[in-house]
Image (cartoon, rainbow, N blue to C red):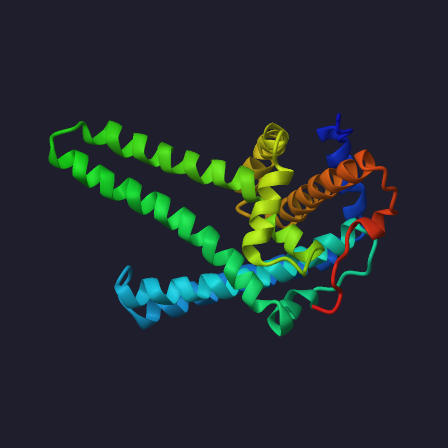
Length: 253
């Protein structure tokens, strides 16, 4: 049955309109997470030699904690997308009852990303040892690792939203549901990612200042992309809930 999805332009227009007047909350959450990452990086660097086992362990633990904040941040965008009242304090609510889910989601993502680049690095060392051209090997292995991460992301980008929308699902069930929802939609998500490249370049040119506006816009666009998929699927099944009913956010997190 044909799914009636919104176009990329429509999704981005809706996201841009919904963000008006809501940037303060989103920027507050984004700024806190950036400050946390900055502090965690410096604490790790001061506590142990760079790239030592202790340093890497500390960075890994801090990355998991950051994942809980990112999980809370996603609730802010789910609330903005569905017309609910959002607060920067939502950032901390996941620590209360959803920390295990957030850590599980983050752990899988970190494992895939770190694993891809670790295998790429080891393969580079191995191939250099047999006399292969080092430049081509290094570039090729990095590209391959990047492609693995991109393919993984295109399949599982919706996991964090699903975990908010369907709190009864276990982490692996959310991953499976994301893979199912992304069937036939990977090109659309890839187009969204590509459409933001010019804006991320502006962020670089502005020395990161532009991220305070591009990041919220990007996050809400991904959230609208997810909700559009849910909406289209329910329409095919003959369901006609309101926008707020389409997202079953557990506001008790």
